[in-house]
Length: 172
Image (cartoon, rainbow, N blue to C red; front, side, top):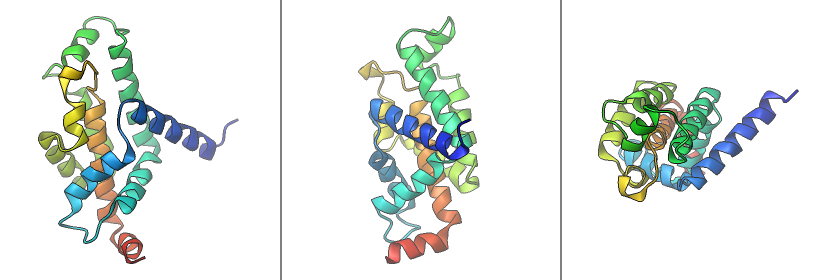
């Protein structure tokens, strides 16, 4: 039987591989975190942002949402979904809100500050989110753009809820 720690590591590595395969690096997400938190966390840097992102990426509920969303994007890109889901995913239908619901659920794991940050960054399409949302690439990132925004927003929530630890990290 696989231990919880081994399974966590397996899921985490799977997510990192899938993010990279889809063109997303942790530094891209960190750039969003810094953008969102620069006025609230003095001296916030990429290293501390990635630390917070990794906290999110090791939370099981977050892992499940991320793996599910990326898998649906990949299946849609390969044309493996049945109608009408295939069309909905290919066109990123504006009334299909399951992607946002999943992202809001992920963000809410870290409180209301994360949910409001998610809504803000989702509207702006800051950084990598603009690239992921670009329909001209032929990539289907219906879930991925929202999940990346939610990961960044959740990391902001983690930073807000762990202010003392963050301050110590930034002092060193």
